Amino acid sequence: MDIADLTGTYTYRSFLDVPDPVDDFNRLRFGQLELRLSADPGGALTGLLLFSSGPQPLVMDLTGKASTADPLRFQLTGKGRPATPIADFHYEYDGTVLRRWEAGLGQRMTLAGTVLRAADHGSGASLARAGQTASFLAVRRAA
Image (tube, rainbow, N blue to C red; front, top):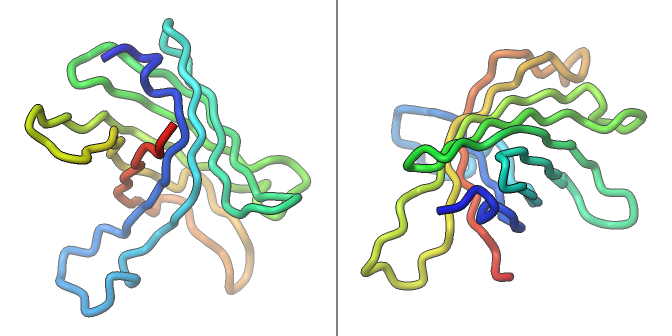
């Protein structure tokens, strides 16, 4: 797989790492966003995580790098855009491309890994402390 193959639009979902069974799958939900990723052949990654749609979507800008290891690995840093309600967001991502099964039916490229909240954001009752981790999957949409 070439690094440039990472380029695309994905449905991103992150999940709290709760070890016990849950009766409502939504209790695991950390986030569901749109991921737009662009990769150059040298390994540089740029992109966006869109928190909402509409005329003024909330956006985190992504920068990072990918390596040609097998399986392909990547690291991303996401930061909220200045002068927006998520300006203080800062997240770090470490991931890999999941295996493509030769006999798989309807399989899509899927990115998987972990995410770290690298800085506090919010305040008061809505304070989200740095250090929270979650697992993520990002499934590539049709081109």
